Length: 149
Image (cartoon, rainbow, N blue to C red; front, side):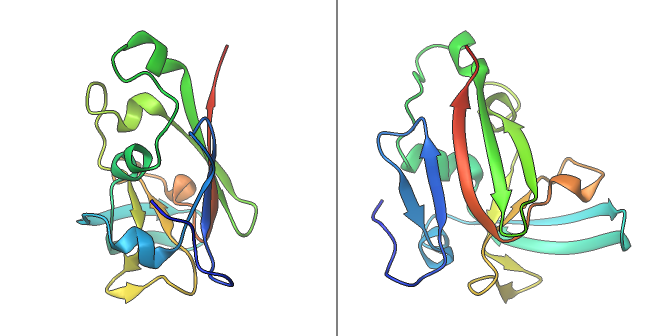
């Protein structure tokens, strides 16, 4: 994957990767996309129903060359992803949630909501299995891959 254009809003993938990678919504949109229809409870605005389009977090991670030995299973379980939004909101996702050998959840980095592109806002973390919307991070600025020792 290549870096981002100058001045473009981008997500920084850093931590346990070959090297940091910055991806714009447009670059994320170039990856194979999924569409999910979700409903979740939002403390501030009640029940929400939306359709999101975007690549699977798993696909983005694999394309960004994580420093994770995919041949071992137990070692992968030590990895966590901290997803940060422009407003400072942070949510943690475990490697096992997205890894197909474990939970294999269809977690997205959405590039569109209800058909509206998120180029200006930045991508959104979408966790369809969550009944509460607290981990739906908007305007993602960074994804840090870390390992617990």
